[in-house]
Amino acid sequence: MSLWAILPVKPLRRGKSRLAGALTEDERAALNEELLERTLRTLSGLKELEKILVVSRDPHALTIARNHGAKTVQEDGQPHLNTALTRASVVAQVHATQGVLVLPVDLPFPEADGVELRQVAHRAVVATNAEEEALLIHA
Image (cartoon, rainbow, N blue to C red; front, side, top):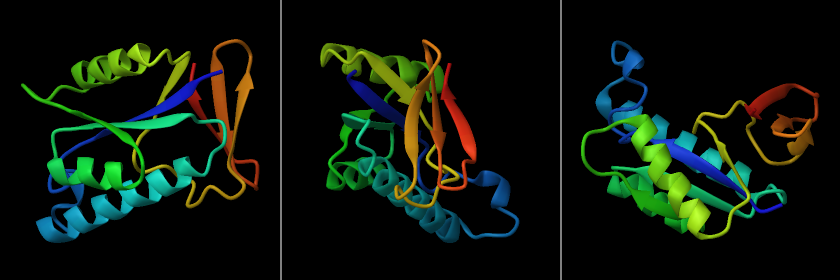
């Protein structure tokens, strides 16, 4: 099965806005960049994924994604998650992808070692780590 991961990414300086009282804008941008890098490293290590596709309006986030071998989609117009995901899904379909997973950039798994994607039932995929903690990522 041709499986792609789609990562929607807010502009790095705008993500984690709830932490604005505790972190400066620069600190939040650095945190968001680290979360994106970590998620890309984790997903790149998963043999079950054929490709990672990052959709964002942030040129720096897209550059980071390309540096990790991911395909990218520049989000434009009014920011809207569903519109961005629809656009990214169309790109995946053009490449004959049989399935997509939409994942947050702040995955709870710190590294790919021990993470496994398993198809359960017909249309659900579960990611587990070495401790068998599970995250349902598509249903």
